[in-house]
Length: 122
Length: 137
Image (tube, rainbow over all chains, first blue to last red; front, side):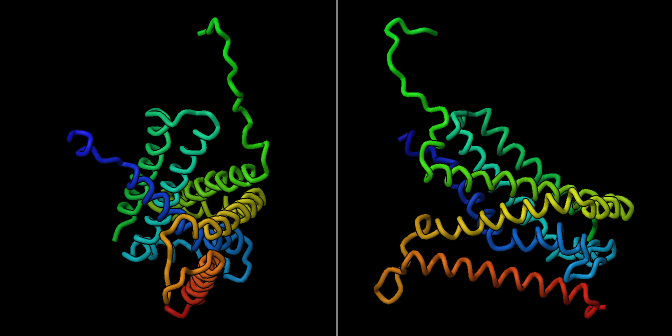
């Protein structure tokens, strides 16, 4: 009876891993191209596409806030879960310490992103 | 702790290097490091954005350095490989999809996923072009 009541937390982490992996597969390449290559080099997009007034307005809008939060937080949770399990494959036991380091980093990044989005204002 | 019987323990170090299938597995698992790196780049940018215009401009300037552009080309390669492997594996990770009484072929699911990624990429590029092109000002 007691064993049946104790539910695994695995589906939560697996869900975050799946959501982040899907977002990274759908939007990751184009976002890296825009923020890291196209805008810095002025390719295709205007070099001022990420200027201060534009990005401030983007981060203040509810849709921009939601997008930035989902991308940063879910990318982190996806990577944390995958790295945690790959460490196990490499012989590092996925015990409490490893899990705390992986998921703890993702949780910290999530809190920092939420704090920054709050500080940017509405 | 030494065991006086000295039993044979099959060494597991480097197990994945013995088989090309496992090498590919470890390579696509390693894309997570690059996804994490890009999330950190964005997180730093967001923190700089919250600190004001000067901090934000400093982050933009850092992205213009040749080293940063080369790093982002590496990130683009790794995350594109993640996208390709993600949709290649998707037929095995999702529940069976039945349309019209027949199970959808794995290749079809992969192709749909890759097409969705293409549509999303073009949509984001078009949205940024419209927003940055001054149509909303």
